[in-house]
Image (cartoon, rainbow, N blue to C red; front, top):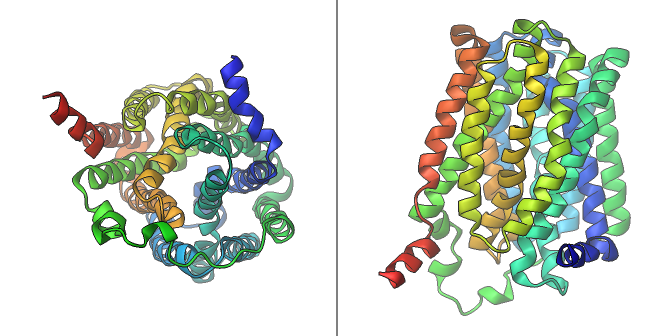
Length: 412
């Protein structure tokens, strides 16, 4: 406990860390307000079919991948981190204001893909900024995973109350009030970045890259490695399951189990209660054990989670299963960022964007499959598909990392 307390002290004594906490809390609040209700917004409020809604979200995700990749590259080379954070938060606020008032398909598509596509870069940029703050601090390098998980914890903290508050706002003020609240979070985010994030020069080419072999620093060389590509694909599959599950869970609660929007809000705020201590716990474990091994365990838990959701009979059955969801998030949501950053230490924006791109590709597949399969398989059948994807993800994660392969060769 003493060692754990010593690890936690810098979290509150370091001004840069406190700033990251607040920014994560605001971003988590915005996403927790709108995330659980997007499928109901598209199908019930706007009147899209499930297939059209799937196409709508797919296009948004694809455009987001392109925009995020371009901005991540420039954030590591030309633009200051502060500039990209300001631009992303401003676009996030404008995008959600658009969703509050627009109900026509084409304008919503443009707002969601372009405006919110730029706004979506805030997530990867926060963690790129967090890595830079860690590198400038006195924190030992091997402790980085713990602190990255602690930063991620504040996003989970927002999700403990965000969905429940979001459901109350939606009941009282409809979807317009829901999206205005999300936009307000981005406005506050932008103001805090403007006031407290220091004005730095664009990073340019990292000094540590000079004089190194291109193969050691090339983004393409890293992501085409067998282990990184296999694990990236594993993240795509598990995040595909997560996307499908997020859209399907509210609908199975309301349509199949006879629940209400309040039940949906409760279901989505149970998991984050457990995510907070689990993020810290697995962050500590990551300082002593391989992140890849911990991620494999997390995906195994995901198999159990989605398999169990095929058996629920009443809304409250969903609540205890959210502990399994919290375990999956506690491992994959925090350690995955550290995992990718460890392969591209001189490109924090691009490295974090690898995880974000896995999420976006997973979203693309998830939205497409949800729209295509929901009316064929039903809500329980959708969770069967999620279970199969989680199993495939686990198989891909069993591909040994380069470090594990080298260790095995030395032992042999």
